[in-house]
Length: 371
Image (tube, rainbow, N blue to C red; front, side, top):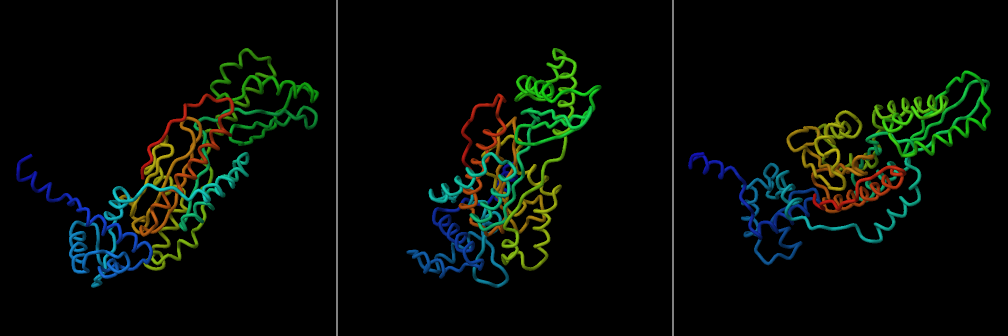
C-alpha cells in the first residue's frame, strides 16, 4: 500500500475520543436513553454538575459528531447518539454490572418452582426479561442436538393393540400404536419395557440401534420403533418462539410512526426472519456470552431503529435455545445485558439438570463475560 493510500485509509477511521469526550458521550447516551429527546450542552452541565462551561461541552459535542458518534435532528442544538455512538458506549464505556441481589433471588426462586416443567421455562423467561428490562422479550425452546431416550411404556389397550409411549430427555412425549401378532398380558409388556429402559436410558437413536441385535425378537421390534420415532423427533421443526412485552415496546416513541411498528412485529412474529437474525448473531455452540446487535448493523433493515441483546443458553452438544430482548436503540444496555446473561445462566443449568440424565456431558467451562 502506498503512503498516500495509507494516509487515506487512516483518515477514514474514526478518531479515538479523548477521556473527556468519552465522558460526555457516555452522559449523552444515558440522558437520551432516559428522555428520548436530543441532549444539549447546558442540560449536561446542569444535570451532571460538570466543572466545565456549556461552550466547552458544545465544542466537544461538535467534535463527537464529526467523528460519527453523535448526530442532531433537523436544526436542534441537542445531540443524540448514532449507532456507532451506541456501539462505542456498549463496547468501551459500559461498566460491568449485575442485577441487584434481591432481584436475582426473586427470579431464581420463580424458576425453582418450575424446574421440572420444561414447557413453563420459556413463558416465564420471556415474562421475567420483559418486566426486568421494559423491552420486548423472546425465548426459543431448548432444542436437543440429538434426541435421547428417557423411558417408554407399553400399555395394552384391546386385543392385539398396544400403545407405546416414549419419553425423551427434556420431557418430549411421543405416542404410537402397534399391532402385535397375538395378544400379550400387561405384565409381559411392562417387563419388556423395564428391560428396554434399563438398556437404553440416556442413549441416542444410533447408540440404541447398535444394541438391537442382542435383544429378544419382541423387544428388538419395540426398540426399532423407538429409534424411528427418535429420528423423526430430531428432524422436526423447532418449537415456537415465546415472547412478552410487545405492546409496551410499541408505545415507545420510535415505533409510533413511520411504519416502524410493522417492522418490529416482523422481527418478533415471522419465524424465518427471526431464525436468520439469530443465526447471524449467535453461533450454535456459543453458550452464555451476550451479543448486542445495534440498528441491524447494516444487514437487517427491519432492525434499523432497534437493538437486540441476545444469548444462547443450554449445553453444547446436548440441547440449546436462544433468548433476548428487543428494544429501541435508545435502551438501557447495562440492565438488558445483565438480565439476559442471568436468565441464560439459569436456563443453562435447567437444561443440564433435565436433559442430562444418562448423557455424558462436556465439563462446565467459564464463559467470557462481555457484551
